[in-house]
Image (cartoon, rainbow, N blue to C red; front, side, top):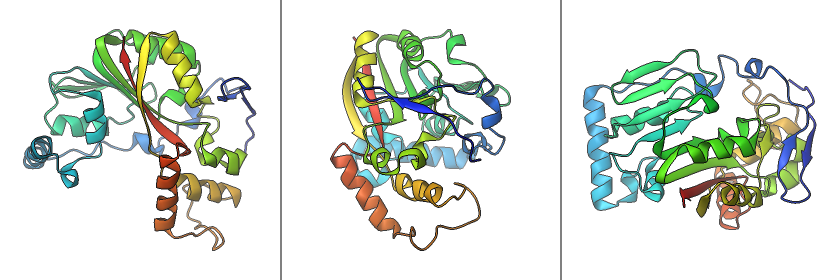
Length: 280
């Protein structure tokens, strides 16, 4: 849209934060926003196949059977009897895949979806703001949702308060420590202005954990080639999801970009990470 939104970077912890965000943020979440696409349902036959695949993965540990959420659930120690919440869940597709794999106590929350929906007795998606959630959970996940919350300290405190004793929390966010921020600056695709109120640093996530009684017990960098090709589109004045392709100067082989992303992840220099917490 080529609008300008000023950000500042904290000299103490390195967090990037928006100075004067728009009052009405809903207009920046159009109907075509990627997380609001229709929920993709599976037939009973397919759900049974997914449950069997997941059971086989748990029994065998064979990596080729592991679904995209397998690593997250493993690290969180999430059992099928646990109450699990996805905050900022969009259309709820991730929760639906957990449901299809046999999980039965699932809740999703997102203030920008059109309506609340009961997918099944085991899965409810609520049109609800974080601060209106009243239940507590064994496991809470936020997949690229935390940075969409205006007050990170208050939001983190609320999330910590929603955890049951011995509860576990996963927050996946872009991070200010990545090489992409240093290279692309205002064209870094994960700034996503103005939807991202802030981009935390590793130091900031540690500060929040200590302040609100959680232990940060693991960090996984999980950045992808998106940090390169998305940012290069912005550098060349293109819209992210427009019909225009990258100019030849930016059309780098996809395999090389993914390889570079993996190398940066290994150096803790990727542009996004998964933070795992537990209640002390």
